[in-house]
Length: 263
Image 1 (tube, rainbow, N blue to C red):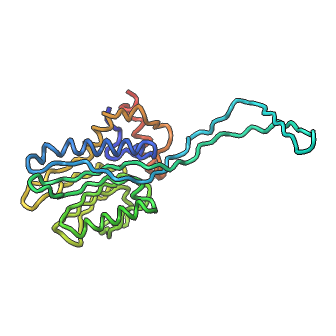
Image 2 (cartoon, one colour; image 1 turned 30 degrees about the horizontal axis):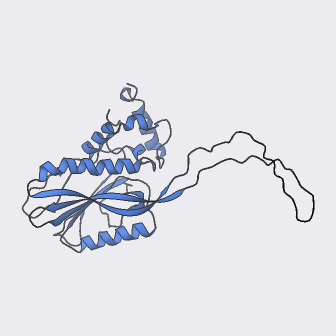
Image 3 (cartoon, rainbow, N blue to C red; image 1 turned 180 degrees about the vertical axis):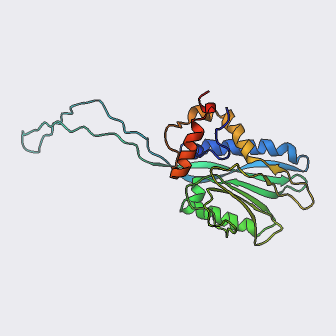
């Protein structure tokens, strides 16, 4: 079953779901690009280790009622006491863990040269901290080389990656795709779009003179939505994370009331 939304499904951004969506997009993107790039290029999955903070349990857990009897003997006395303790509520705490984040490299087969790096941003890239600083440093190193960078940001939360964005007419754009060609210093192409819009189709930068295949991220997202059974895993009765604006929330509610979501 496809996602009911024309572009990015905002419910896929939930913290507990995004790592699965991210990895699925990486593998689907490689599966899509490989036949388009052979025999000159291959697409490799690379990994880096980052610190992630897993969210607490969404609901508190209440233990069964119990009376705990404590007996304490004091030194040099025979005195003891017994107390019925008040019952606490068991809550979940955010848990920092080390996780592996995947990204892609398009590599020229003949000399094993990395031609293009493809990044799909995660919360660790967009939240202040050492992992964002490390990613920004990597990003800046790529900008100083002949390697191209494709940076796909499908997350509304967090601080967007820095670049000067022109011709937006003051409108807020929820998502963005940056294409920085290695042979063009000091500038890049950005495809900004809103939650109501389809995901833009963009060219994959390669070596000069090679045909650059169009990347249809919208179709890839729809494919992994169906393959991953996200329609069964998402609770569309609750708000997405982060929540939408009032107008966009009304728009989303109308889409979710459509017959396709009730079939």
